[in-house]
Image (tube, rainbow, N blue to C red):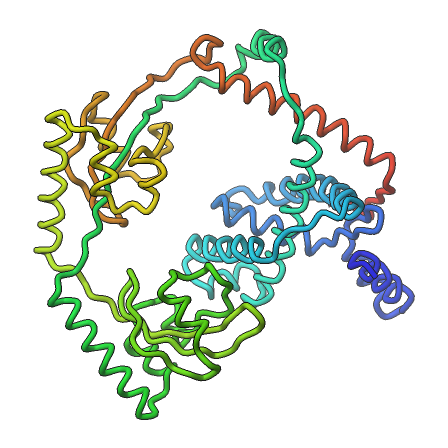
Length: 428
């Protein structure tokens, strides 16, 4: 029996009960075929949107009703697409879904400040927020996959691109100033003395655990992973690939309740305990002790980058030096080149400040971000300009394709609406 049919039967049973009928009818916003859209579902989507986009709803309370109406429209379309997805047996991988859910929850906690504040905003426990968010993301992923499969062969001809540009050129946005940049990253690694001190601290903690000390209490007291320390080191259930290999290899080798020896990763020294295992998922907790770099370690890295910068200025190839010296894990694929970005939309303000000062071909002095120390190489700069077919063909072609896809999508939705019954229970 499908999930949707179970849901419908469950609602029918409740509607048959006088005690629940009025309450439940009031909770339904719309019915799309076999799919039910609950008011609480709309509220969940709206709250997610408000947090992710950092909207100030107190200064503009009318925006809530606008968002609810827009969300209902989108959910009706989404339920139509889900019906199509069920017909075509389209699914998503649990592992990929779980990763997106974890990231969404982390982002929301980061934006509101804490787990407690997130629970307060939703009026729900974190467990329920995660469950609801998982359902939202799962539906979105299925819809996107369904849409992508339906339009995967859609293309635009040269004539269509030219016609699109002729029709919409006056309403196209201007191409903001962009830069094509590369970087060399150097991590500040702690000295041998700092490593030894951290290892000794981890040894002392392991000794206490071997003598019967409580793992959770020691994690709260000593662990330098702030997110898990307050939960007694608990990392929850994770899948293969979620952790760095050194940590994962040990975690999957442990027996339930067993405590590992000291494990070194790029993050520091870990002591790991396996709490539970369900198939290929493990629930672990850990105590992390980090070896902290000194001021001398930072000075050493800055001098290394200054020497590399001078070698580039002297004519050595940037990409070759990036391959040789950069600590960026993607350097083997991109040879240090990060790509082309709008200057004003660069995520890291330090990069934005540096590229504004550079001319094409120049290399910055070393500077620091949360990731380490960098030098940035400015390959090209393109000033803000109006799109033209001569200079921006690829972007205009993509605009034209998106425009065509949206028209075809709207046509498809209208066709689906004729095939599937839609009942709006109450105006939002």
